[in-house]
Length: 128
Image (cartoon, rainbow, N blue to C red; front, top):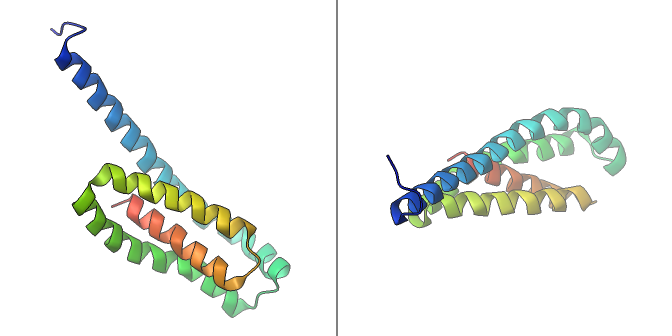
């Protein structure tokens, strides 16, 4: 039995909420990865038309996410070993949000490729 109001009970509640918070953020990162891949298939047609991209340029945009995921998992894995998983997951979530905003507002192919690589790195780092 636990007695409410003790220090031990307070620490247990804080640890429980920390675990819930970490699981929620990790789940969002995993869902964002799957959602991004699903939505991109439908957006490729509009992307080609709106930005006037060739098939090669569209393939670079699509592939940059996968390359970012591969690199991000290795880079953020090392960072997580150094500073801890909680801070790394928070950093990848912020990186993902910023990259999404940048990708959503850009009209430049290079910036779009870099933003998508950042999104991939954040997704790869979020699942480490």
